Picture 1 (cartoon, rainbow, N blue to C red):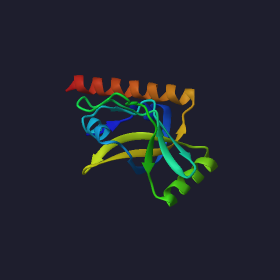
Picture 2: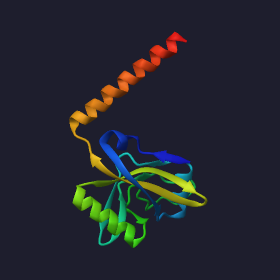
Picture 3: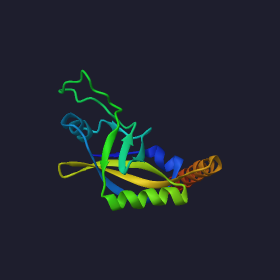
Picture 4: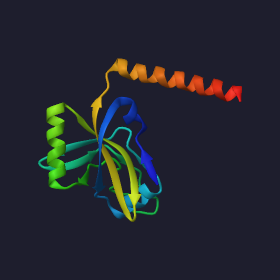
Length: 146
């Protein structure tokens, strides 16, 4: 199962991708494998040499005890120290942000693809919408000719 953050491509110019493990409970792993995760409003933050996934929503697993479950709790990401240091330096020097772009399973583990990204300006977002509309019209006219 692969969960993709579609808003990230619209809001950011994606530059460099890194794969990270995610610390989850057993019920959360089952929910992610069932596709019940949203990365739309999530972001990644580096604090005290550790990387955290903030505001990602993992719905409660229906067969688990959900009395004290918080679907948007902060989750730790697993990266090597040298990767964390390199990401932190790039973020400071180039004024970039870390954005979660995809979550997927590899074997029995849940992995998160995080990306160094540059936020787009409003005019860049408008330009990408315009380009997408033009491409859709071109494909539609080509399809009608066949």
